[in-house]
Every structure is written in structure tokens, then in C-alpha cells.
Image (cartoon, rainbow, N blue to C red; front, side, top):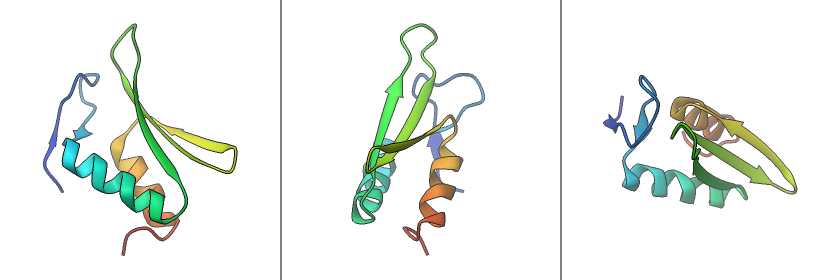
Amino acid sequence: MKNLTMHGAAPGQATPEDGEFHTTTAQFALKGHALQRHTRADDKRITYTVSRWDQSRVFSHWHDVQAFLSQIGGRP
């Protein structure tokens, strides 16, 4: 497992280092998807949105983002 740190995430929610996030964003872009990271103002929880062609999927956990990238063929 890659080194994950807490960046204002909810307790127990691992988030990626900035370098890993930007690399993953680029891998999604190569597949025609946009990855965005959002931090909720009220409780500082982080969510990730992957979108393409007016459709989007929201993920609460980083490992789910990585699994979706694998599902669309973005990772070996």
C-alpha cells in the first residue's frame, strides 16, 4: 500500500499525498475523466468526484477512487 497521510480527512479516512493525487488526476485525464477533490466546510471531510460527459461519481474513500481508475483501464 502506498504512503497515505491525513490531510484534514475524517478520522480513519486516508488521503493521498499531493504528488499521488496529481498523478492519479493525470491518469484519469488520459482516460477522458476529470478527478476533483472537495473538502466539506462543515466537518472537513474530503470527497472525490470523477466526471465525464455530464456524468459523475462521488467517492468518500481514496481506495475507491483507485479501484474505479483500475476499472476503466487506467492502471495495470
